[in-house]
Length: 259
Image (cartoon, rainbow, N blue to C red; front, side, top):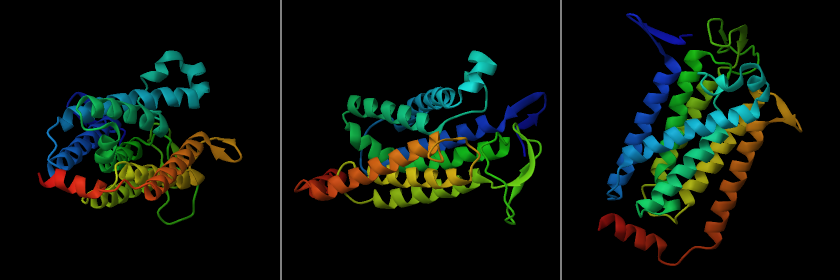
């Protein structure tokens, strides 16, 4: 593993480097989405604000999820390079986009549709940072041929375990590709968001079965419960839109794109 890149006298944390790469990739995808729908707005600035909000939310949720770390480290846990909770980042990032979508007159839910592919791809790329750092978000022991050990990670282990960050990388890229393809045609506002919540929530729910996170309720981890809620909300939103279609929605969106 490679927690740090040593360049001359500098030690660059690979987690932070991949977080930057993920942010740049997300900004690029949102910008391309704005362009194909002829939306005049600052995609890079919006993504930057959402990323900062997501990092804050991920850290705060991690503290709530792991109170023993706060007892041991105090407020230093907020500045530690490890420990970011997916659900906290999702909630704070979505909230930041909702506000910006309203201010930019794009629409609170519409902006989430446009940002959904970027969120999936950015999350997947960010997981490469977790993999390189070996920060403990890998899975349980396995005898599968692709099992890996992390002897030099931030949270080292000599046992061969599931490289779950790589699983999540693959899932994130696949979900992002699917949402990008789906978002190319006019659809009811909120449909792409619903698919993102369903697919991303389901992916995280499933991978939690082989991760080392502590189980807190009915054999499920905190992140697994949150992911399950995300999937349920996404499925409910898709169902509601399918049964309450607004006449002319697709036609109006198509006219907006070609205007």
